[in-house]
Length: 534
Image (cartoon, rainbow, N blue to C red; front, side, top):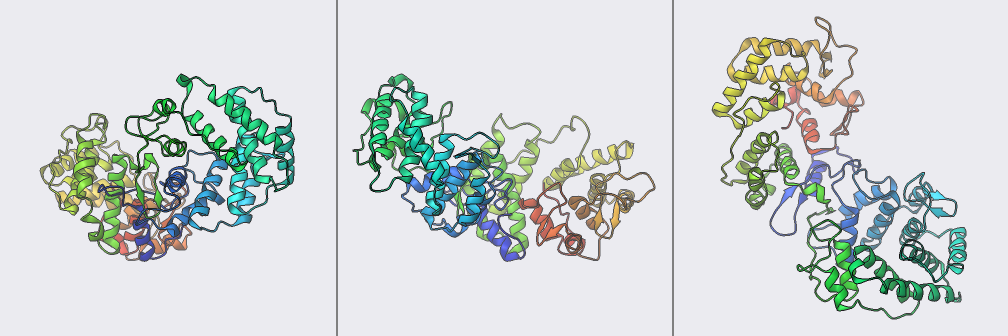
């Protein structure tokens, strides 16, 4: 975990780290802010946004909060990052340098050592070393204050000395430029610059000779890196020609990646630094107080789910008022249009509609949400269908409850805790004592000990004493059987919880919905409310 969650104050910190505050007025939550495996934060975007802003984050962004996950990235890597391990460490070290975040040099060195391949460094542990990955590792060492191994510097110097000036564009980019970076990192005041000057001049000629029609963002990156090397050698920086800028910079003043339409912060930064005058003045990307987030984390369907869970969690901690009045624009501009978008799968529509109705109600925004749940599921009703109908209420809830109950009464469903939950919810709404009694029987069958349940189904007329415990099943069972003890306390005794982070092996407990469950079940019978989020 990025940080422990032991108190309600910790939960409040998590919510603040999860809340997108800029740019503009579309505010919402992202999930898994303190998860190592599924972190929504982007090393890439955070690093390049800081480069773009000369190391000065925008108002509301807190370097201390950024430091909590950047330290994890440097030490263990973030499972959600698309970057290779050496790039993660390099970006983490760069962010730390900009924001005066202390990274442990010994831990960083130990992680880099796992990528050592002879005198070079590999992109990931077990892969072959490359000069590009070695240059990234050397940048991390420089930013953290680690010495570069002498053997690496010697090999780089020898390789550069023997490098021909007749290079292919690929060799110039993948070998020559990284070699120049590594050699430059180890250069002292009295060292000869002859090889560096010879090779850098050759690479500049090679890059400039590439036909304009073949120029892309990779060329732009190589050109910027080379310009930085030449500057360190006392050579003048050279701006791009206007026609080159026209090829690279779009009509919106940005640079895009191949086959993408959205602007790329790194590429646009390169274009600006290389003198392209049509580049926009500001690169805006979503961020929380803890840094910039991945593009995948701000998908409207995902942010609606996260916001729905966050508001329920906030209600258990200190109330949702601090966030509720800032969600109106997202309700109207992000989530309502999403429901009308044909690309939203029909199976996802009812769930999103129920969530939006709840969020809009809390935000005090009037929206018309079509439930789209009039048809029976293609297979059989499941717990999520009952929960969605329960959230919608009214005649729709009664219709789904009656149909689902009829299905359950037909038989054929395994007597699992999900089935028990359906029976208990439906029985409570329809005042069906038989359904509620059957729910209680299934719960007892799946009970391991008080407040601890297996997911089921168990063998008929047998207890589940040997079953593997499940956090969601235990929450459901404790709610159905109205446990006198607080379930989370028993789970913690069994080593399944560390504060409000509860894991049964199938989950790490760091999502907003999972933390909501743990907090709700800190009371007997999980506070008397159904503890699972839709």
